[in-house]
Length: 415
Image (cartoon, rainbow, N blue to C red; front, side, top):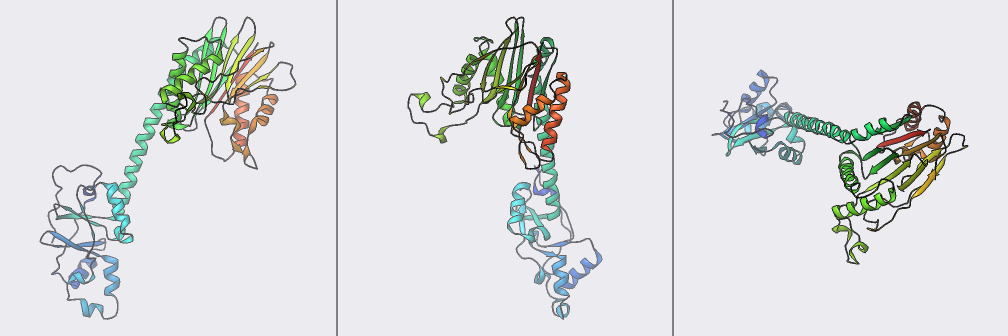
């Protein structure tokens, strides 16, 4: 006899009650012949709840019932007996408002029967209906898909925000340079790579930055670094890249609380007390056009120079300390390298997303050697065409291997 299965007041989404079904119910007074008749007349009926006086006492599963009754003499012996003989007397019983996530753990705890028999849904102990295991799996899949869509929509919008921070640099780059490229490709829509460019009457400043991590955590770090750089530029000169790195290092370490024992005058600060250990690798360059002088300071990020008639790539390495990390002293000083550039020199800066990418037949890193060989191969092309060739070679090396990191690559031909 079917019972009233209306939802209780105040029900909300993503709960057991969302899966409520109202199949035929029976009482313990019904016989196994009654159950056989119901299953025979209703092929789509998988489970029958057993309910006495509005309270659930068990579930009869079609497959279990039919296979048991088919045994020799079982129909004759058990046919007129109570249907409780073949029911599951300990079904999973849940309240209407049980969250689906909690319900999924309860179903998994009881194993296969939780999926095959389903679960009985009640309100204040009174039977409302039944939920099927397959319906729960579908609801969880739909819920996960909805969360994924929401997350991806948020990340795509975050990408718009992150790219908006690059707009002024793009404008200045286009206004100051005639033959150049800036390739920026996050691994996960948003990322931890960032670049900054400022045009001045007597030259330009360019920074290529690789923050800790990639994806959303990396993107958060780029915002922190962009803010730190902007603030530091209010009191420091663009023409001294090493001073900028030192100032950003102090600001990041202090704002994120990433101070080591030496920074605190010998006070013992254990690693577990640290909230984070994040920072950036980067190359900061100031080019003074009248004197054709390039001033460079780098944190684990080298620059590459290719002279017009040179035989090879000149590599200038930065310091081996990152900016802002716990292991970098609060008063650490980076070195400044000053280079007189010949007319026609090409300057390249890349993050380690290119250098460290696994690929090739032996699945090894792309490496600086292959990167420099690629620069030499395409040296006579205009910079925009060079970008295409360089990235094409990089992706051919990567092949079917997963991208390891964000990729940024800057190149400029200084006439």
